[in-house]
Length: 366
View 1 (cartoon, rainbow, N blue to C red):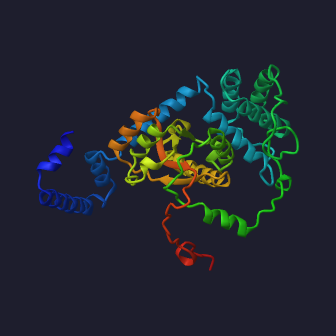
View 2 (view 1 turned 180 degrees about the vertical axis):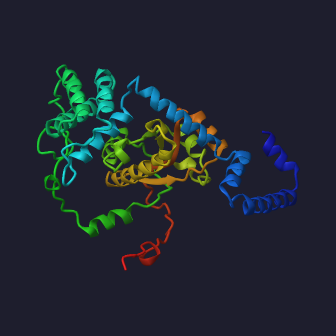
View 3 (view 1 turned 90 degrees about the vertical axis):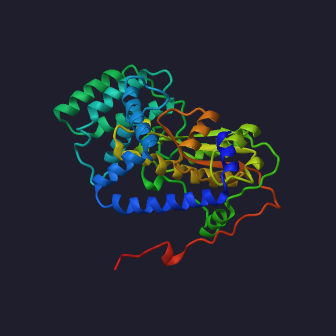
């Protein structure tokens, strides 16, 4: 309330002059602070622009270590290490001994994971099947033999999860590596995928028509096939098709003025920093989340639902607004918002000419 009042009583010319001075001062500061790492560190210590991210990364690291003793619906360490074993299983030529440095950690984590009553059954099956395959073919060393003995004792009490269907063509019911030749053939031509990509535009005008949860769930499930570093999949989609709340979420972002009231539904793509024990991986949530978001948009398009990704810059005030509308964990970061709905036929779409040829691809082969 105070800010709008101040804007009314202060002359526009004064505000414009103050903003010009502020920009000029920032440019002078940048001219010095970029020169050394120490000055850069000091700059951000004073400006505090990244403080939210710093705290979220630390809270994520703490949550990661806590999760090893309290396994949830998914386990980041187990997912990462099982994927590492898979990469060892498909190596050419495959080494007789591999995974020795982390196999005991993996089996220890597996022991806790299979006891969890809420860990996804498919995740338990994947870990079990890959570990079965690993211990069947790996060579003998004192560390591996110890882990093998430990695993076999745990495995005796495990079921084989035969009632779960495989999503990928492993050649059996096991969730384990398979050869490229097992992949299903596809009749999709380049011209068809090009047509889909062109069809997928950023749509801002929608029909006043409910967006079915089952279609969004269907698209989300297939979007999860997107590549993910060590298969951690450190993200989730938060869906809302309640009109008032959808509009409130959309208004938290920049660039939605004028069309946010028109949105019938919205999805928040949210990254999970509790998947990592180290700061070095803090950007992976944005990479993996964006890869999945693109597949989600394409999948929704094939189901007749149009989308518009909404940029989410790093602004504390905006994030506080959003956290008042949707519940986020302290270590979760918003990657982007995604409007979704049935497009209005007469709604306009920006031409948005795209870069091509040498503007988008540089050949350094020669």
